[in-house]
Image (cartoon, rainbow, N blue to C red; front, side):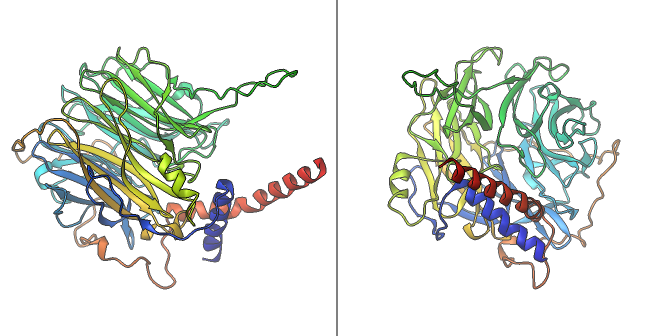
Amino acid sequence: MFWIRAGKFFVAVLMLAGLMVPASVSYGQTGEQTPGWSEPALISYGWFPDITADASGRVHVVWSSGTTGYDVVMYSTTMDGVTWTGINDIAAKPTLGAVTRPTIMIDPLGVFHMTFRDYTVYYTHGPADSVSAATLIPYRQVSKGASAYFSKVARDSQGRLHFIITENVFSAACSLCFHVFYRYSDDNGQTFSDLVNISEAVLTGAAKPQVVIDRQDNIHVVWEAGRGGDLGQLLTLNTKVYYTASYDRGTTWETPVEFQTPPIEPEEVVGETPAAPAKTTARNVVIGMDGVGNLMAAWLGLPQDLIYYRISSDQGRTWTAPQPIAGVWGGWSLYFGKLDTYTMATDRAGDIHLVFVGRTVEDEKLRYTSDDSTILDLLHVSWEGVNWSKPDTVTTLVGDVPEWPRLAVSNGNQLNLIWFVRDQENIYGDPSGYQVWYSRGLSSASFVPSVPLPTIEPTVRPTNTLPPAATISPDATPTVDFAQLPPTTGEGQEPFTESNLLALIGASLFPAAMLVVVVAAIVLIRRR
């Protein structure tokens, strides 16, 4: 217990030292929201949510949580963004200290599709109008083994399900490098094609894959690349972002290409040879598609801390030069957000909406007059085919940190946004106090009336053809309202979580880190 808590402390010290920002008091939400967005509503305790909407206008939300002995996927739903159904656990696995990381999608037939994980990735589905643990089919294993992390599921116009998974590939060059794998199913997850490594040519690890399928059923995938990929992040700061595509519904894949952040040109010095451009990195890549089929990719470019974008009008075969989005910065300079990501969605008018954690000019002015230097916004911009709109601030946090926004459009113009917040006292530590929040905005697109979901006939639950996940009986996993749980797990009891593992890693690296600091200090002193 001592070493776990010591690890948390040392990780926090190292992270904050790297950021070089002073400690501050947490003020939480400022209460200042753009009129176009509703006041953020607290949904529950938890983290890493996902969101989708169906043709009836109903919004579905899932997130990672846990209770004694179990890693859990929690679920809730709303029609109006104000009134929510009760919170239910719809999937649970005996705890391995893993974050379940659920992702969801609803197809035109009214089927709710979900992937989640312990250290294996699983798939399940059921009727979207009655999502519960009882209506979802038994979990089906999608990953090859028990060293997988991220997953996504998408459906093309012909009904094929496409699965994107990250899983570790051990090699002498990199013992911990997760790769991006692909497989498909033509029978709603009863059987699967072989796993294909679509990032093998990149020769590094991978995290946070995103996928979009165009009108011709071409598949477009982006991801963050670098050493690592476990615990939801890459271990190195030297990260890149990559793109690949399949033009035959997943049979073959193009060689991945890097989306490069523009280099920083050094200032010329008279009488000296000009230095080489400063090295740049990239993170948080996301991909979307507008109403006429143009692809849009955006990512965080470092060290500029700017959000760059590229457009393709020929299904990803060529792309425009990267350009920064004006008037905004990323949040990396203030918060070391290795686990964060960006999100995109397209409304009825075909406009692309991008949401990310970042800063504005107003934030910078406030930061220099505030007792707390960590002031971050959840920002929204939209692309209408020519330029990006001015940024809308969904919410501003002072001290606490927003993370992992996910966006879905309902009824053509309702923007449904969910994210989670790390409380400042436990930003790099105990996640039991992290909270899932929701807000609704309105785009300029026309409203699409709700239509009833298709009736799904009862089906016989399929026979597993891959190693099945053990189903958990209702008695073993009672429905838990995590909004009512206390922020701690009890005296002397601390569940093993990914944060705890990070803490242990931090504790083990602390002596080496301190040695580096001491050596650097000695070198600087001698140079004076």
